[in-house]
Image 1: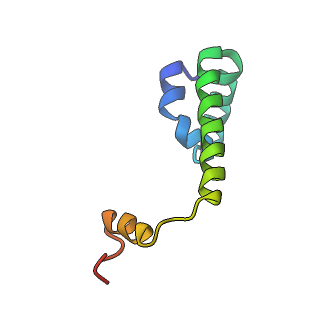
Image 2: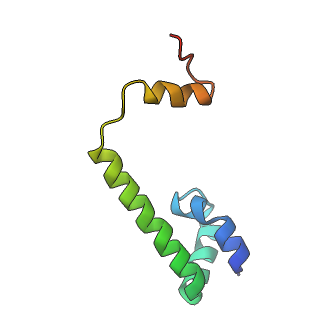
Length: 79
């Protein structure tokens, strides 16, 4: 069974559906019985929804995506 530390450590991967099914199941079971972790999960899930909605409503400033990509070494901002 997952404990609170494990659950919170894996929460983002859990929300993204990136965990193996047995780990996903273990964390789901933990969330069913732990109000503290469930509250953190609920907050993070709601925050993701709000960010996604705002991202759809707001136009990205010109050049911002190129600057972000450059931070990760994907694109040379001078090109």
